[in-house]
Length: 328
Image (cartoon, rainbow, N blue to C red):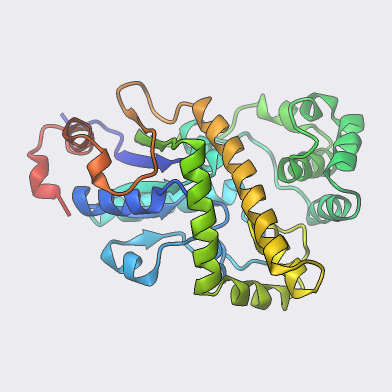
């Protein structure tokens, strides 16, 4: 009997691990569609710099939630969860399986565990948090948060600017701390069954991929993308303005840094971020045992998935059916 909850596949891992290529190959093999689960790839105007799938790749299978938000708007986790659930329903209605692909752990967690019942935060509180972050820096904002909400502050690193700003806006905008709200429950898990593939390549392979990808981005027009973004004169605290490579290339365009120095810093910052991503994914289960598979290499296609894993995925998606008839 087909389970009541429909199936979906999560393809996760750090930046430059080859997630998009693997998700595309899976979608073609399993009759799927790719849904973006990366917090930077939701923004329009940054296709090259955020390594979004190319138009040719998007033409091979449906791709959803890529480049759908203007860079002047912050894409919160709650927004993404609602948009992802709508996209998943759309994909299922079309007779395909949703394949969610990205490196933003909190996006995946919002589906697997759900979100807390935090009310909407007034825009004034959001703006004040972003202003303080830009003017004083994350360490000072952490100190401010500790004075108002020591419980939440104790769970956050002083360098974690995005989560600090979120925690600060919640406590100032609602009068209650983030951890306090989280104890009240919220949405609950999404009504789907999940299988997951985690990419966890060695550090040296990932760094080489980051360097090669950065050089390719410069060749493909990343500088022109950042020039157009800078011309919008957006709040530098907005997520799109802090995408990897954006601050560094803006510094180059403004004459504050050479291109070589900007490239070196962007590569270094991206590498440090991938370490945090890899650590996060190693400590969070995206699917139950037996439905979670790891690849300890960069993805280069389906050849790295054994026939048994592919067979398990087909049985997970199409239980009790000859799954071969559902291939791409």
